[in-house]
Length: 271
Image (tube, rainbow, N blue to C red; front, side):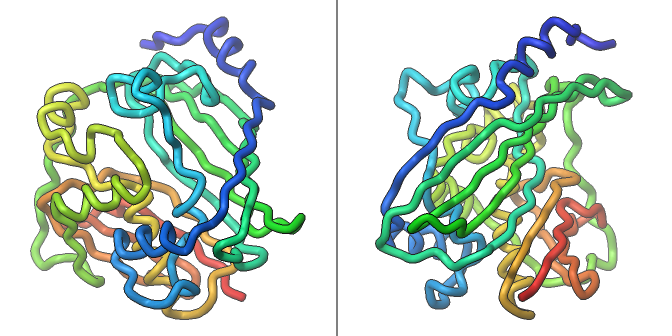
C-alpha cells in the first residue's frame, strides 16, 4: 500500500532545476588517498573514477541526519522514505583532469519520480554533474539515487558451491572504514553494525556501492582507457562475504555475490 500521495511528489519535484556549484583545487594528495582506499597502487593516470576523489560533501555537525547522511531538503529534496541509496551512475570522461589546478563541479537535479509496486514506494532522484577545468568539460556524470521504506529485514546471502567465477574480493572493516574516510561518507550502514541491523534491517555492514563501482572500473581499465562507465546496483553486498569481479563480455564487467546474484553490472566504453 502506497504511503506517498500526489501532493508529496509534486512538492519534491519542485527541486527539479535546483543547482549548486563548487570550486576546488584538485590536489594530488586527495587523489592518492582515494587511490589507496580503492586498492589502486599505480600512477595517478590509472586511478579509477578519479573525479570521485574531489568535491566531497562536508556538512556541519548540525546538518547531519540520523542515518549519517546530510539532512534532506538542502540540495536533495526532503523525501520522507527512510532508506537512501546511490543506485546508479553514467559517466563520460572527455578530457583528463589536471591535478593541482582549480576545477568547478556544477550539479543540477534533473528529475524526481515516484514508482509504486510490489516492493513498495520508490522515489528516484537524478542529478547531473559536470566537472570543468579551464573552461573545458572534463567529466559528465548522471547519478541516480533511490529512496524507499525500510521494509522487511534483508537475509544474509547463502553461498553456492562451486563459487562464482571471477576475481575474489572480500573487503574487511578496515577497508570499509578507509573508503568511508577517503570519500567523507558517514552513512552508518558502512561502520555502525547495531544501526545497520536494528534500524535499517541489514544482516551485516554494507559494502559501499561506489567502492564496488571503483573496483569494477579498475578491472575494466586493464583492457584500455575508459571513455565511459555506467553502472547499476542490483543487490547489496555485505561484510564477511566474498565478492567475485568478472568480465562478462567486451564491454561489461560485474560484481557477483557468493550466492550467484549479480550485485552490480557496469557497461564500459573505451577510447
